[in-house]
Image 1 (cartoon, rainbow, N blue to C red):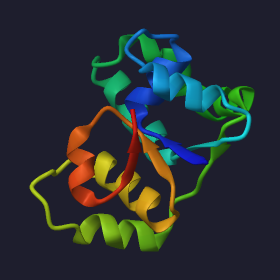
Image 2 (cartoon, one colour; image 1 turned 90 degrees about the horizontal axis):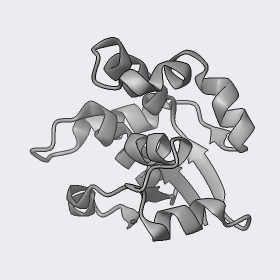
Image 3 (cartoon, rainbow, N blue to C red; image 1 turned 30 degrees about the vertical axis):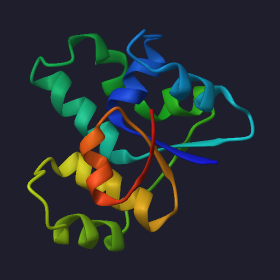
Length: 128
C-alpha cells in the first residue's frame, strides 16, 4: 500500500506520540507499505514552528530531509496537477496544506494517513 502521511501523523510518528492510532502505526511499520511525505508537510511544520504552535518540532523544521531519509520515507515533489486540483476543489475546507495532501493522494492512488474525517468528503482513501 502507498501511504501518504498527513502532517500531524508524521509529527506523531516521529515523536512516538500516543495520538497516532494503532492502525496508522501498524501500517507505517509494515515493510510491505511505502510511506510518502509531501514537502507541504515541511512547509506546514516550519511555519507552525516559527509561529510557536509546534515548539517541539525545531529539529524537524530545520532538518526535514535528513529525518525523512532516516525513516526511509519517500520525500515527494509538488506537481502543477496537484496544485491545480487543490485550488479547484469546491468545499468549505480552506486549509491549503490539507487540500494539497488530498490532491496528491487522489491523483496518485495513495492512502492518506490522517485522523481528519473531513477528508472523507473529498473521496480520498484514508486510514486511521
